[in-house]
Length: 465
Image 1 (cartoon, rainbow, N blue to C red):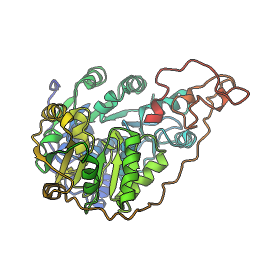
Image 2 (cartoon, helix red, strand yellow):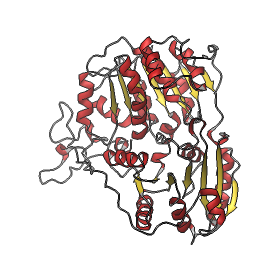
Image 3 (cartoon, one colour):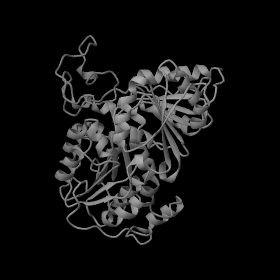
Image 4 (cartoon, rainbow, N blue to C red):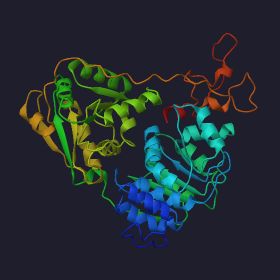
């Protein structure tokens, strides 16, 4: 990224010297946040002053409060009209939206700002009601927010502060057209902040189009260069890989394991439960309520292993998580960095272990080189001492376990946009929460069969977000 034309302000040494409302400073004290992290110290003087900001910090570096405190401070004292929020945070995944909301809620309450979380997979009707009741701050995934805008339940013309969090992942997931369309609707004279662990490729297009003379702050090394994180490649035979993964999962302490597909997640979880390991599954095929419940079980210790697809590679924070295992190596270096970023957060230590079979070696070598890491390479066997030394692997008990099943989500009936005729597919079909695969109940034929119609581009986006 090119440097800003106008230099930024010097970093802040403390929160007290920043121009923030007293209730925000008091809330920081109550939450035990005593000193700003580097990304916060660097960006807050400029963002509180209204500058557009382009910030890069490693995952877990404190980006949420870096943009959140500025957004709340600049919105405090204003009241939103129904359906017309004043501040917007766009994120790529449901989990990250919930994490941002949870992080900002105590500070928003301190300055009497109302928040609304807008994501796919949950009742669109309830989210519309929250917007109708008035919310100054909206945290949203692009697909569901677009649906609500098209239904007339949200207008963005009063949004004066807009944040894009993890913008590179939104670009990678294909959300760039939706993000662009949403940014075109916010106040043109408003403030824009873009925060991410990496700033490259399509993100540059967003910066050039929507940020005005941004001040650039890049205060941390890339995630792969975190000094408290160890990287290991464990060379395993194809026949022994499952046994290696199972023994690692049976270790003392929690671990996140990443695999490629939803089916592979469910298969591994079944195998672990049968062997006596308390494991939970997290992937895009689960309802949002199920995903929330699985995360709660993992965080409170009911489950010691979380098996996930890349849906958990960003936006999930678990304290004291010291091991991430790539059972299936990631497809590219950015996925590797963000999977690994679930551990060694905010100065803690942790290890990233990747299981590599002989046919995967060349591709994985290229991937870790692109990530800028130098892993220790060790051949291991499921019964070997090296596996125990590196991961703490143990023999599982062999006694099958059953976790309390996350509650199944009751399908929500999609609501037709105002003015839509009963025989036509409405805007709510794109990412609506009916879970039936069709545009809405109204678009089904007289005998209950889906009505034939042309599918709108991007129609599945909200469901995945």
